[in-house]
Structures are given as structure tokens and as C-alpha cells.
Length: 430
Ligand SMILES: C[S@@+](CC[C@H](N)C(=O)[O-])C[C@H]1O[C@@H](n2cnc3c(N)ncnc32)[C@H](O)[C@@H]1O
Image (cartoon, rainbow, N blue to C red):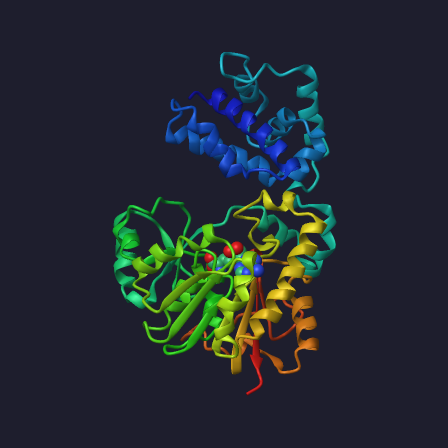
């Protein structure tokens, strides 16, 4: 595809994204896949270029939408004008076959005017969330928001259970892929590029998984040991479950649950690759009332319960910029209600002296500190354990938290270079 045709393709997809956002329909990646399914002439480079453009606009959605009063062509034009001069824009909007229509005088004037009054568009965020974001970031508000609007790196977890970290690093080097070791989790490798890894032997052999560093650190803070009884109540596709299994040397038991069968289905093949043999996965759909009976046998038996609850995902806006424009007050309230219920339910499975590790990838106090404070007020046999008391490995740097609760860990892109993440460690009286 020639460049103007890519612009037109991005425009077509963005129109669909806008419709989908207002109807809470399919996500951008689904719409992009669907768009290209019927356009076989587009090569992988075309797809990559169009996808990058679509996501650039999604990242800057709030600002662009405000400036262009929701006119998608103007939104895209304004976004392009950040990096292209007027001559290049004219060449892109040239009216040829498959290219966008020629720019009108009004559109040219619109770009000039928008540039003259250029506000801090890099801080682009839903205004109704401002207080919550300021509460988390304080003086670093602008720096954090700018970072949150950027792209996340590609992060791998080396499967410590397989003990072949050297092989992984040697392979990445042989592929010419630059990487850094994680600062906070010694299993993390951080890449700038986003390679396709499913065909790699080290992936098929279970030596690596894709997992962000904050999530790897969170599992480490669960202080899981071989021989323990561990429950992952919101296991999803098992990212944290497998990170926990890697710490257990196939001794003990991990029970992985989720109420979504589509998410849970990836866990089995992943566990097989990782050679995690102590794992059982079960669907705990609430429909049919089976949940209670499936979970009943685990009452007060777990050394560790990992509670990686559904949340707003505000800490991962770098990875999923669209989600910030999809979040509503109503949805946030609903997440908080589910989190509160899961905290109460999960606590029932912790044995005396055991721990529950509450985690979110949210930046908001409603989903983090407030949940923990309410929980502690209600559960008299619970106390917070400081994340600082957990051994984070030899030579680990000092880990400062953004949380208002000193025992809890709150991470962020600007302060820690990670996703926004929250961890609270709750211990039951012996
Ligand atoms: C943040 S995701 C978990 C991600 C996963 N732990 C990982 O590391 O890949 C939250 C998960 O909670 C699940 N969930 C939501 N409500 C639930 C419930 N009532 N019981 C169990 N799982 C639930 C969702 O299906 C989703 O997979």
C-alpha cells in the first residue's frame, strides 16, 4: 500500500473505533484484525504502519477529540501534523484512488490554529479522573501522565523453574534483540522491540513467558515457597499462576480459578510448556450455583491466596490506551463492588497464619487503599504485612512506594519504569 492509502485505511478503522467506543463494542485490535482480514493485498508492513497510526490517535484521543470536536478526519490530520509539515500533509491527502480527499481550506486553517494554541496534549486523560490521578501522582502528575501516554516496553519472564536463564539471554543476543534486565524483578527481561515469540524454541520449551515486570514483582511479594497450598482465585490465562509455580519446584499445590472459561483455557497449554505439574485449573462460573461447592473444600486451607482482581486497568493505559476512554463511573463502581466481594470470599480460604495478596493494575485509591482500609475494618483477624519485609533478592535496589499506606506497594511508569500496579499483603492471625 502506498502511504496515502495507509492513511485512508487508518481513517476507516478509526471511524469504526469511534462508533465502537460510544457503543462499548469491539476493541480496536479486533476491529483492525477484521479490517485486514478482507484486504489481503495489505502486507505485514502495511498492517503494522496502519495499526501504529490508529493507536497513536487512540493514545491522544481526549485532546484530539476536543480540538476537532469529534471529527475523525480532523483528529487524524491534527495527529499527523505533529510530525509532518504542511507539504507532506498535502501529499498524503491528495484525493487519488484509495487516498483521503484533498484538504479543504477550513481543514488547513484548523491545523494552523490548533498548533497556535497547543495545550499540554501529552497529558491527555479523561477529566473526570483528574482528582484520582493527582492523588496517586502528587507533584509528578505531568511526568507520570506523559509516561502513561507512551508505549510500554515488551517484557519477558524467564521461567526460573527451568533454570535456563543463560540460554534465553544467549538466544536473544543471537537474534540481535537488545534487552535489559529488570530493575525490580530478577526474572524480568525488557525489550524495546515487540517480536513474535510463539515460534521460538525457548518459548515452546517454556523457558519464557510474556509478563510485565510489575506483575513478576507482585508474585515475588507473595513469598510463595515449595510445598505450600496456593490459590489463584482470579487466574485468567494464568500469568501469575505460572510465575507462582516457577517458585515452587513442583512441590505443593496450586489451585487456579476464574469465572471466564475463555481466559482459563490458555492456562493448560502454558502450564504444559512450563512443566508446571502441581496445577489444577477450574472454572467457577456463578451460573448454576456451582461456585460455592467447588470452592468449599479449600476453606481455611491455603498458605497463600493470590487475588489479582478485575479492575479499571488504569495502570496499563500504556498497553491499552483505549480503555481510558471506555471507563465510566458506573463501571468503576462495579469493579469496586466485585473487588470487595472477592476480598471477603478469598479471605475465607486463607488458613490461620496464611496470607492473601491483593493486586490490581489500577492507579486509583478506590480500588486500592480504600478497599484495603475497608477490609481491615471488617476483618479483625487481618493485618497488613509490609512489602519491605519480603526478601527481594540479593542486591535489589530500594523500592519506594507511591501508596498512602506504608505497607502497600504502588508502582508507576515514571517513578519505577513499570506499569501502574498495587500490592497489599494481608496476613491472618495464627
Ligand atoms: C486482572 S485479571 C487476572 C489476570 C491473571 N491473574 C494473570 O496474571 O494473567 C482478573 C480476572 O478475574 C476474573 N474474574 C472476574 N470476576 C471474577 C470472579 N467473581 N471470580 C473469579 N474470577 C473472576 C476475570 O475473568 C479475569 O480473568
